[in-house]
Amino acid sequence: MKSNNSTVNADTPEKSLMSGKTKSPVHSHGSGSTRLIIMLTMTFLFFVVELVFGYFSHSMALIADSFHMLSDVMALGIAYGCIRIASRDTKKNTFGWVRAEVLGAMVNGVFLLALCFTIFIESITRIVEPEKIKEPKTVLIVGVIGLVINIIGMFLFHGHAHGHPHGGIDNTTSPMDGEASHLINSHNDRALALTDIGTPDEIVPTAPKKTKSGSGQLNMRGVFLHVLSDAIGSVIVIATALVSWLVPGWETVKLYMDPTLSLLMVLLMVLTTFPLVHETALILLQTTPKYVEIEEIKKELLKLDGIEAVHEFHVWRLVGERIIATVHIRFRSLRDYLDCAPLIRSLFHQNSIHSATIQPEFEEMGPGGCALTCLPENCNLSDVKCCKELTQSNQTHSDATQRSDIEEVCPQKL
Image 1 (tube, rainbow, N blue to C red):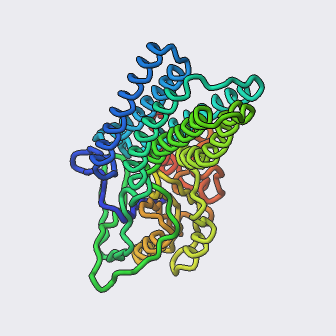
Image 2 (spheres, one colour):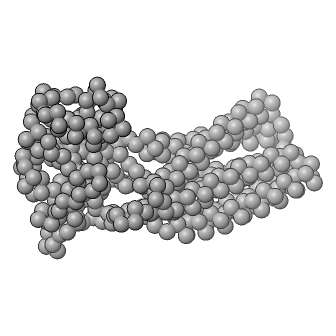
Image 3 (cartoon, rainbow, N blue to C red):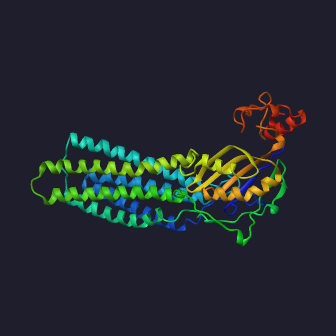
């Protein structure tokens, strides 16, 4: 039985094989960190001003809004902390901490949805039991200051949240020379490693399909939505304060204007925040991106000369546009595998998959065989092994071969 693992990568390797130290595959976050610190400082100072002024003026509205600003300070702190964590080097986690920013974006998104729910309940309460705004001048001043701070925040984060994706994709691929492949013997398995070697005249242009935001962009998007919600809230505060202060009469409008506009703001924020939570949840659940057509890729692989079968094909997103794939491919021979490797790599590039691990399997294993089967009576991993059904061809292998398989997959059971 022959089985080798081959990793085909388009990106620069993120792990040093000599040191075993993994760096998070994200670029410098210096600019984003600086913007977050600036916004965090302004928001915290405004929180202190509102809290102190609210207690001195006995204004419950200002005190309540100050604690809303405190929630923004927490959201900004989460975003900043996730950026710092994502940039750490680690020897333990093979992908680093890159998903910290995705997690931070999801936490901020859920936090914002919870805040929307709170505002919704408060608005309904105000509609059922309307209250007239007290001290409209004070409310107006606070609203203007808050709007200025939030406008600054929107300028700080808007371009960063919608800019270039992290870890940009190279739109050309350089097919590897099959003769440059070499066998590497490690302490626990045999791997056929494909070196990223190509000639200048063999560059294959690719047209990557639609890609999603990077993890850092998702994180900043969560921050931007917090700032946007505050800006809309400040506009509502200014509008209701002006009407209450300068417009005579209109008592009914003055009573219901604030809660009605707040409900509209909640609707807008839910519509903009839910997609963020949905996208981050899909990434954390390791779902296949919608723009990657698994069945179409399988069909294209089977069209390549030398490929007999494709199975156990799994595709998921690490962060943003960084797509990971693993697949078992049956070849007629090792020569066919070496010849097909650059074509497979190019096909994956065209489908936005830039890091793929291939387990090649060969005809002498028998029809329907799998390189990583294990025996149910001797291995507790029978429910999670890659190929769940043992075929007749696998069962006819010698006891020595079967024992070798068990040693490789489940050494603790021997």
